[in-house]
Length: 89
Image 1: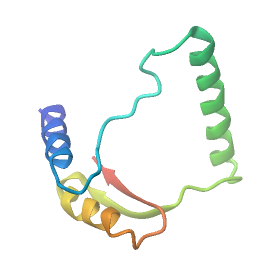
Image 2: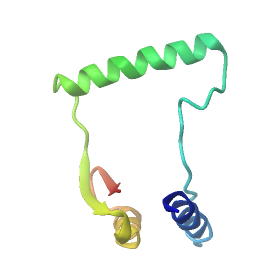
Image 3: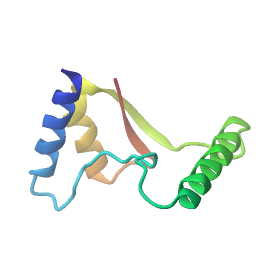
Image 4: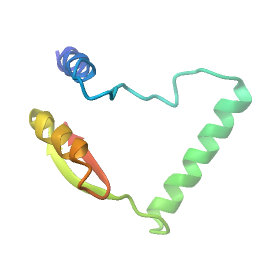
């Protein structure tokens, strides 16, 4: 049921007239060669190590529960934030 609700909201976001598109991004989707998938996994592991050790930090401007997706999109569209607006399930 949650997946259906997410897809419905995704469709709604794509029909907004703001020349932006929303979608799911999945680096593990299996596209590309075995070498590409292996390199992506290695790069992702390295990224996680850098985050874990505090060498790089995420720039999170605000966190919103999924029910407040409208406010999150409005904040992100305002371009008045530094970082990402994060949806929490």
